[in-house]
Each structure stands twice: as C-alpha cells, then as structure tokens.
Length: 518
Image 1 (cartoon, rainbow, N blue to C red):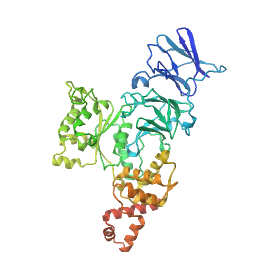
Image 2: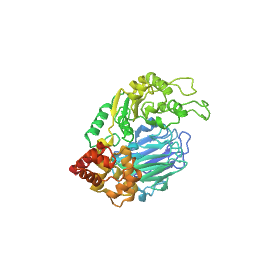
Image 3: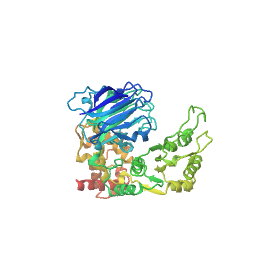
Image 4: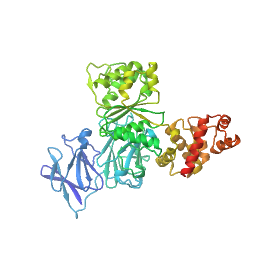
C-alpha cells in the first residue's frame, strides 16, 4: 500500500493512502490536501499513479509546465514548498483514512475501457473535435493555456481537470462559476468512462471509444471508397510538410476534419489547432478576429484581444470559407503570410507569428481570380498544396461506413440502433446535396423516431423532414418502376420523375453496388 506522509520541516503532520485516483494539493478548500502556504497557489500539485509508479505534476503554471512530471521514489523527501514536503512510503499493514472528497460515483460510471482507447469528443459528425486521453492530466476551460480550449462564455477560464486513475478517468471541477455536470448530475469530483456526457456551460464533452480498435493519432475519418481513401493517403503524405494547404470541396464534405487530420498527423500536433469561418464573421469584426485589437481601438474594445493568428502561434490556423474574405482585407492577409508579422487593430508595434495555414472553400477560386473578386497573389500563396474532397454522391460506398459510425456516435443519446437493408439502400440512393452533414442529420432524425431498427419508412420520413433538398418521396421502387414503364429509357424515366438523367443513373448504380456488396 502506497502512503503519502506530509511534513512541515521535520514534523510529521499527516499520513494518507494514495488510492485509485489522483490527490490534489494546494491552498484552495476544494483540494484533497489543503496547505496554507504562500509559496503554493490554489491548485498546485497533482499526485497520481502512472505505469506502476507514482509521479507528481506541477499544475500551478501553463501548459508546458504542467506537462513536466516528477517521479516520487519510495522514502525520498520531495519539497512542496520551502516549508512543506512529502514522502512516499510503503505501509501494507497500516489502515489509512479515506482521502477527503473521495467521490462515490459508481452510478455515473459506465463500462471501463483502457484510457488509450478513450477520446473526448466535442461537437457532432464532421464538425466534431476529438482529443486523445493520455497518461497525464487534461485541463479544460476558456483560457488559452488549457489543453482543451472551449470558446463558451458560460465556462470558467480554468473549469475542470481530467485525471487518469485506476478506476478510469477522474474528473475534478476547479471551482468553476457554473459547475460541471455528468449525465445531468452536478459533481465536484467523479469517475467517468465511455458513454458519459460532461456538460460545462453550453458545451457537451462526450467520452467515447475509438472505432474499430484504431490507435491512430489523428481524428476519425471514415472512408471505404477508393476516392476518399486516396484523399486520406494524400493527407498523410502532406501532413509532415510545413507548407500551406488549400482544401476544396462542397459544404458538408468534411473539410474541417481533413484540416484537423493535417494538424494531428503533422509536426505541430502538440500545439493549438484554431479554426475560424471567415464567412460567419460580421464584416466589421473580420479584421479584429484575424489580427486582434488593442484596448480602445474602436467602440466596444474594452480590452486587448488576440486574433486567431496569435492564438494559433506555433500551431495550425484553419481558415474555412477563405473565399468570403473581403477583398480589402486580402492584401493585409497576404502581407502577414509573406512577412510573418501582424499589427493589431489600433496597435503601433508588429508581432511575429508562426502558423501552418490550412484554408478551405466550396467556391471556385480560379473563377474568382479571373473575375477579380479574389487576389491572384493570395491564391498562389495559399494553394501551394491542394486537397480535393469528393462529394458524397460520388462515393456511395462510404454511406454504409458513415451510417455505422453515426449510429455508434448517437447511441449515447438515443440508445443502440440497427438499420435495415432497405433503409440503407434508400440512403445509398439519395443524392446528398448536403453531403456528410446532411446524412448525419437524416440518420439522427430517423434514429430518434425509430425503435431498435431503422426501417425504410423512418428514412423516408427523415428525408422529407430534414434533407437539404426535398426528395419528393422517390423510393428505390419508384425509380425502378419508372424505368420499367419507359422500357429502360433512362432519359424518358428521368423526365417523368422530374430529376436529371445523371441523378437517376447514379442512384440506380449506387443501389446495384450496395446490393452486390451485401
């Protein structure tokens, strides 16, 4: 049995057992061990087991400092401050008191998986961000020095900490303003595992397992089609390079997932990944969001603000919908890329920045360059490497794999769901103008109203309600009947159905391919 002994000078003050979870030491009353010493901050030390030994993490500073760990050999005195110290000892026959605040959270825990198989998922589908659970603590909050930064105003700067422990994954609220909730129950400390939903502010963090035993370091990208597998192969080859990447593809194809893969598989994966949608920013705030501003730079600028370039310094900046960037700001954007320096709005001095730039758009940038709405020099600056993401309708083989992925993902909310062959064939036959995002929405709607198995009728209802383009109830049987009625003439059948001939042809091919695969 591992015991921790706490000393003030040579005087033994207390002894406690190092149980299955980490012990936090600091001045805050919420700590497991509270030491009133001016040398310590509110939450200073974290003592935990790791790979058969015991280590200490100094969690009092920024991310780099928190990454350092200090081994605690048996019988060695380790200083906590100038006045206080601790020592790890073995006392197999001495009963120890329960650590203050030890959680009783069996009802909050689910089936336990190895920590290496767990990921923290924020968001849904192709928009989701995934963070690996490692062997050290993960800090969550609004402040930029957290391991997981959440831009939610209802979240505290340093909101919670996730701590690996013998029972699974420990959670500790760090004195947040609005609290931390696990599966709807407010907690101070808890043990969570696969399936748990952590609510902070207006944001949900889901504890999920990696699919199919995958141990890759990048985000989950689902592909079975040759075209998409080729894209993912290109991403792996391009990720280690430092050059800018331009991702082209329709809305909803998963361009941000590709950008995140480039980051996670590249040399900057230990640094921040910052994503911003240029098309979603108000015109008057674009400059401030990109380059930052100083206090008093304009009405409402009550404090200094770091732009996304500064926030992503050392890491990756993903600028989605680059084509929506106003023409007058494109020149300034280009200058930052060429010089590596920017000046905040209202600022007098330049700041150096170093980011790997990844841009994306669904627009035809070459046509925009030709008509003068996008700068040619900027195009060539951001398009050193180009990744084309195919539309979902051109890769129907991926629909089956994506359905499996989404059904497992939403099982936390709606329970386990299967899907019938007819329903799957109907999904394969759809055009998916909204691509993967539309497929996710349709499948969620169908799963919400279905029982244990999603049938064709559930899919038809979901398509009519939430599909990006009305389907007019065109089932597979309707398509085949129309073709039969026109003696196999696809053009005549398509005119009768009110759809393009190419759409009818692609749907029938997709259905045949799905039937052959089954």
